[in-house]
Length: 520
Image (tube, rainbow, N blue to C red; front, side):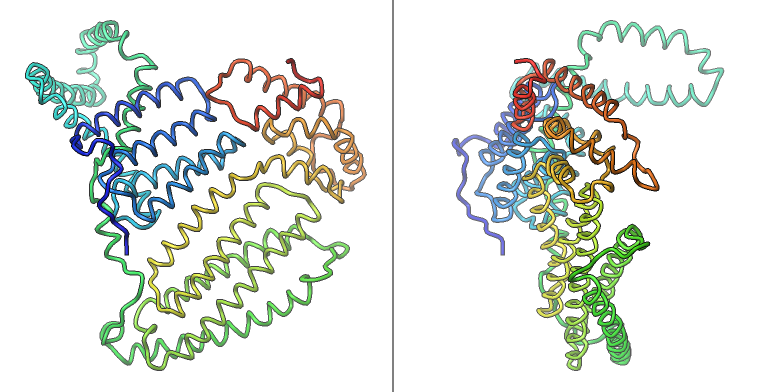
């Protein structure tokens, strides 16, 4: 049940919604322009997110729902982390969170991130088409402005359609193009010269800000997705008849499901027993063993098998088999299969762990761990779905919130520094990807400069390998590439401004200054 208290946070309750929308549009557009024009993401994104969240709270007619508060807190945390580490995942989390929070605040009937995201994207897409109508309503109080706007709408739309057809005909007919080229090109040049003062890059950027503001703080597409989401319950309801109204068909499906689950449970039990005995404890890479195949091909084959298992169980428990009087054995076998797939997921995690122990950390290996955590959460929710007869929508809703939380949580860590610090002190220096050091963000520069001796040691070990698979094996060339990367960073910092500030960037510069590698 959705909480919908009727109290409001609006400081001026007698103010019309039209006036609130206008004030919100103007404020958010001005903030967008002042914060982002010719500036990269950093402190400005944090401030913008907090301003939009405050506007959404103030302009609302009632207090946010529990889902909206949850999304708001997660988005505020993600936006704060943009100013801390400035990582790409924090930026993505804050933008996605802002879209979801906006939809949940504007449409209180929404409950899940997927539908909220669809609502936010629809709201933003509709904003350019609703803007002329909104401007007309704002000008209604001024007779002369309203009259001018009416005539502009009467004239501009036919002219726009006329220009579209002229372009189409010029493309289709070379003779028509020759006939009209001199006149239309001259007219176009004249118009461009007269309007060059208006349609500047900055003006177009302000228009972009207006569209962003309209998509975030104004209900341009009210009630588009909420009615569809409300059709999906959290709990399944039994039907008096089977699939297609045939009891025999339901019985056959039950027997087929029991046979299938008996076979795959026995097979998976054998696989899990082998894995537990083989590499759960005391695993060492055998001589001539392909760890790459063991992890890369093997991991994704097992992950696919888990996802396939989830799909099969969702199909089996899509309807009346949840309520079949003889379905207890099927449900027990299904829950056992889910539990066994969870064990298999732990085995996949251990494969990745052994690979990291041999080759070091990398983004893809961290991504595998994150994906596995989400899959294991999905298996837990699937277990609950089968046991408690919950719906597919419940599964999607819970797991989408888990994905949202995971995305924000990833922004808590500066992964580039974690990867470099781990790999520099790795126990197997001959298998570390040295090239990847230079592909990392600028925040790792102090770590690399402080431990150049460890990098050189890894280069020496690589040169002893039978197969050399890294390019940077010359310490002098590596130091030159590192110096070039540092000079580019300092140049950007000198040209930047406080809007793009992050704590991670400031820490990098401070550490380089302490090493004597950057000016005061």
